[in-house]
Length: 374
Image (spheres, rainbow, N blue to C red):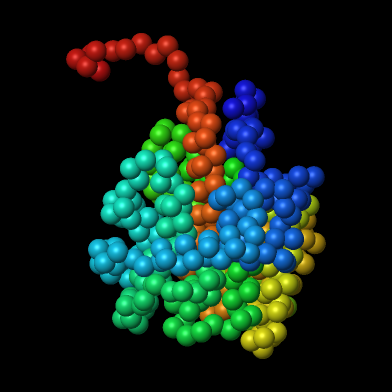
């Protein structure tokens, strides 16, 4: 842990540990997973290859990838008692709370008895998070008790099939697959750090992931894609967007989906998902949301010199795939479980309790007055 004192708050600029998993913001813009650039992974790899890379430390060969996909498929079925819990949760529950509760409940049903189980538990959560989310969603949306077991080798395809109840468009599957890769890992972000803090106390794997989900639920970490969608949907034309955004900026309103705590010049993931948003817009015949998004992007750069982050164009990409806005951040969980798990493994391998200090700013040397004299 760094001895550097942080005067700006939020631990900005403080090095909190070492990792071999990911680099973020090298030279202001780069992103790599275990040494591989996000551009190469998004273009050339499937999400299961990326998950294998993060969880097992290297890219798989064909046989290893096939076996990995088979292991995931075999772990997708939800316990009957977990299905009952998901049905009991109210329809108005925030979907992030559904995943938080589902993860915690699975930890009670299938507890971690020994750290040697962590790899299997990571795969179990990777396999079941989509099912937890969409079993609850479909049950309360249309009364359907969906089947979460599937032999599909693709997590993206499995997700979309459960959501829509039919075989998804291959373009949608590839777009979702790329999105999962882009969200998979991002170094010591708030939710990952929360997981590491939790597991550093020698707590169990499920507790660490539950901590991470709770942290991601906050709108300053996850949720920007939902806010971006709400912004984009306000406007019918690019000119409407420009007028509305100028008013919002004059009022100093926070515009979600722009800028980043680490990147200085651009979010390297944004251009990738923007291209997929354009492909999906063209395929669906959209002539409104994508042009509105582009105008907002241009205006934010012209007026504030703020670039879009991954969340901004992810919003329209998800929308074009028929995904309702409240499910956007939970998709983040379905991907980021790979990065969270990799960090749990790494923290446990060289563990030290994470306990930063603090600069006290309260009163000092106050005289104590006994109760009768107050």
